[in-house]
Amino acid sequence: MTSYVRNPLTIAWAVLTAVTVLSWLTARDGGAAHTLNATVTVVVLVIAAVKAHLVIWYFMEVRHAPMWLRLTMSGWVIVLFAALLGLYFAGL
Image 1 (cartoon, rainbow, N blue to C red):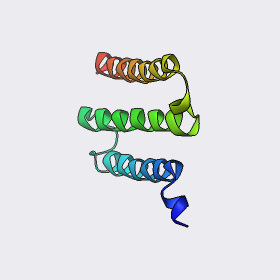
Image 2 (image 1 turned 45 degrees about the vertical axis):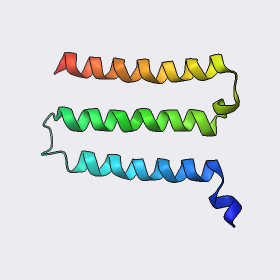
Image 3 (image 1 turned 135 degrees about the vertical axis):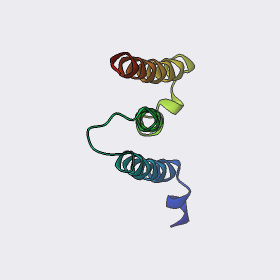
Image 4 (image 1 turned 180 degrees about the vertical axis):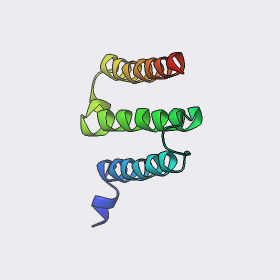
């Protein structure tokens, strides 16, 4: 049983579950419906970037991939996060 608890995939799954709940709580308590709240948006996007990184890293086995693929994956997450933030603040 302890081998399952110490398994990196189990830990990644637990973190993903926790940040999903955190994201939901952040968005739920972010204010009234149909109002823009930049802080909530940024927090939720950061959590989404962390979740994307964890899924790609652990469940797509990129952590065992060559360095160029790990760097490309991390760069993709960062560029996507920056693009989403840029589009959000450009439209705000």
